[in-house]
View: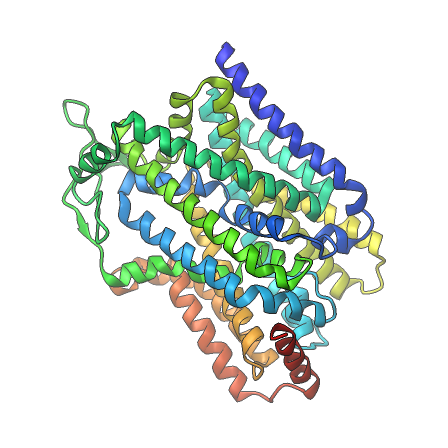
Length: 521
């Protein structure tokens, strides 16, 4: 192994040691109770809440998936996706955070999203809890798999090693410290990882601009590719068997640009709708120590999100300028951040910058694993199967479930040709359509009934699969991101079924009004 690779490994090991240290530091406190393990005792400060929410949300796709889309297809899709996410981030913090923090405490001190929905509607048979927990298990297994794919791609590219071995080693590292430290370790490490992520993105972007000869040179090159630097157009790489073709001189070949319709733009912007249903983000809202600190957290989160998304998209555009023919498939294009980092920085510094990818991946996968495990242990095992189980037993089942879900995610991640962006897009749509409409109706419409809640979840969650695999392939007006139609249909289902069923009980209405009054204080 070369000296350069050893320096990269040393830098990344220093980072890993810091993360493990955080897990060990919080291990004792996390083991005191399932509430501490799953939600940190509602003790997060505003900085940790903001950074942990965004870092766990963005995941490795921010440093690999989004730059990969910009590199391969140009500005349009990446730009409108980023705009949708930025708007969604701000609106989620503005409308949902404060009310959910208060309502979740009032609703029998709910510490998971299924808990909150079940307690909100005072259900006896735990149908809402079971359905929501089931969807969490399904979509977070896919989400966690996307993180493991990111780790596998990172290390196999960096060290020219076997993808499967690198993926498994990375996954085991994530599992080990999440298993020990729980929510507090996850949130504290997410804070550190959020800082590393934004520094890494900005550093690579700035260095890339200088290496490419300045912004004007980058723009000029991008405009020379049909549709590459347009808001209402998209470049069309000439493909044969999934591989972009090269000219006799070695330049990548592109066909005539494709026009982007307003329907496609609205569809892409709909990424922002997903935020209202992301359990790993919503859980951070529930965990902040004081609802009055949410305004400050919102400002931090929005600024972080804007800077990080802009840098990620820019890296893809810059990368196509500097290395036009290096990556010839959409899957390989997701390695542009890794390539630019290794080319621009000395090995030791590159190792720390590369930790940005590891940081993004870890900050997300630990959240996904933890919430998935709690969905089973707290909501299915303790809520339905064994209601008399003591807290230590629930905690033990949580950790066992975490291992099982991790194993499933690792099996899904065995496909090294997976495109991170596409895997994340599907899971994002799943959560956004399953929980987003219900969260908004639960917080802002007291007439919502438990029957409406069930109808909304089932409609949204199932429609993501139906639209993705049955309707979208029809093309034309149906070729839109599955989140948009699934979200709209879920809203309709909740509204119609709620009006057709018996009004909520007086107890439910009074609790709703109490939560509403708490927000206005």
